[in-house]
Length: 296
Image (tube, rainbow, N blue to C red):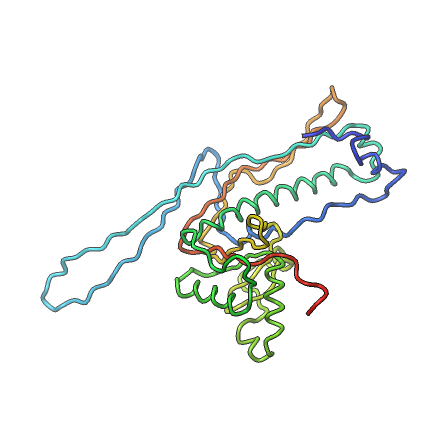
């Protein structure tokens, strides 16, 4: 944590005499929190237990013969807890006086971006454990239309509850879009249609890439390369596969620090992300390196 003063690094150049409008570091998309289950802890609650029941089997009966067997509920549970996440910025009075625009609004945006990025990366970290850590795809493989359709078919065959989503790096989905463009129009629409159903378009429209057999594909640039290669782990998953639980939504407070002649801005959230059902998702390992820009 550093104190932001009128002479800290490049902050001096952000004053009125040099720069009229502040620039922001571009943020990657962070769609994951909008694609999984949401739970909330109420006041005085420490944790939440989420149950899941198994399948029962019906039997053929014979007239006059007693029904002997009985079925088990087969209940399993997942305990959800939360942990605090936050960040602090100290703005000196001198900086606030000399900054050309509303510095509190500027820093608030930066803090909000940081919190969204943290949650998104926490959810991405769950991807590799899905499906018993058995990965779809392979290192150095390009995500093609055929492979994407195979992942969707696996989800259908394994009864992933709808809605089902795919989240992967923009470069992986760019390769998929490139592959789709190579398919003739009639065949192309047999695989996908540009429809987003059951989603909040104002939150997710900018992240949506393609729809294959009812599964919406979203790009997320926070997905990192795995190891020293150009591949990265995205995932295909049901909304029921993972969850985020909050006891405190992102909250910002100000506090005067008179000894340093400035204001403290603190943003805190209390949340946790969890895998709810390992069988309702799978990691997808495909190339996420930059596409060629000089050849076809």
